[in-house]
Length: 438
Image (cartoon, rainbow, N blue to C red; front, side, top):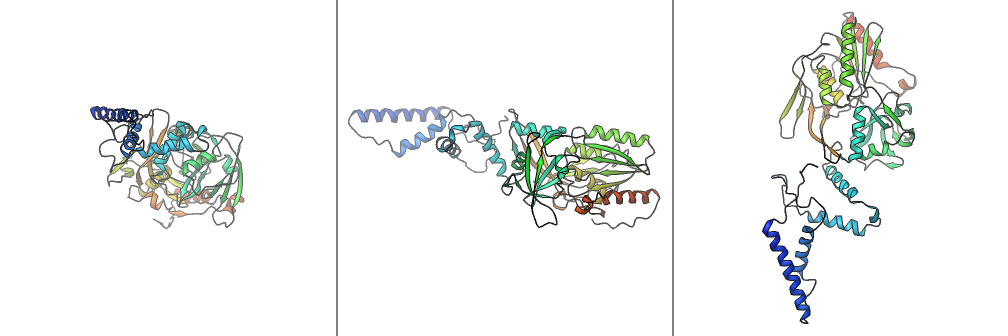
């Protein structure tokens, strides 16, 4: 593990030797006094204080005396309290015999990240890190839905097409009030994800409150193997090419490049880029995708806490810059999908159609550790090229078209229908007369 622990060095060099010598001397005096018939109180405050500090020094657990990096600790912190709590739990907790040091240790690291108060800054032990990496590779076990915190409430960001969550009727925007009858109110996002995921063939019960509904309902979902390619393509009537991106994952860049090459090789009149229910993924991949429409300039801006920023510039390919494009979004569009839709909107490369996006515009840096664990740390916020905060505002569509529960039940596709209608008007050179909601 990286040596970035913030611990105070209690004893060094000869000073340690001196303190240990004092303890030895005190013990000798106690023995001598006892042998002489004198009473030397074992509860002497001096002995207690020395014993407490030196007991910490003589402890067997590692990491107690690592020196803090200069400037990282803003005030004096006595880490002796940490070890006092550790020992109390080990000695007095009713089920302490079954509590491993590793479990306590990882729990402490998890507590540090939770203290930040950001649901996207999380510590992941080795098992959770493996699960996270599997999900980014496109294969994992669970229900097939991305979840996030919206106004402090566990919310479905995006059910993945054809996966158990969608088949059970979950929709973007559904609020998850309980998992297996356990309230989600005090759960962190990390805890909720781990409770929802599980082995293939097992069930999980979610208590759901849907939008525009006053009654909750329990939905039982049987978990499965979630393995999907992040991109699906289809050529629609009128030579309109539809690209549906479900996540910005490991395979996205390769599959998207194949789609672009097919578009160039065929007589394509317009493009529909479907980012609905796309919860995001890799930043670099979203920049690569955006760069197929944007020739130069920033695609997204990272804004740091000190006021500085970093611009991610377009890569210069822009092979799709002359293609008429409509981008579909909804409240399940988050993170990297908001980067793409926001950039194309700001540069006027596409018409954004659908519903306002989720508004997840914070940047997480993933730092792996030597034991297989890792931490995701929110390090910045994302702004569109024109400086709009994605977290605070989301991406508002140029053309707002709702997709209701009734539409879903009746297999209607109002957003896709409107996208095709608008593209055909653009292809035929008709005036759109679009209102701009930005």
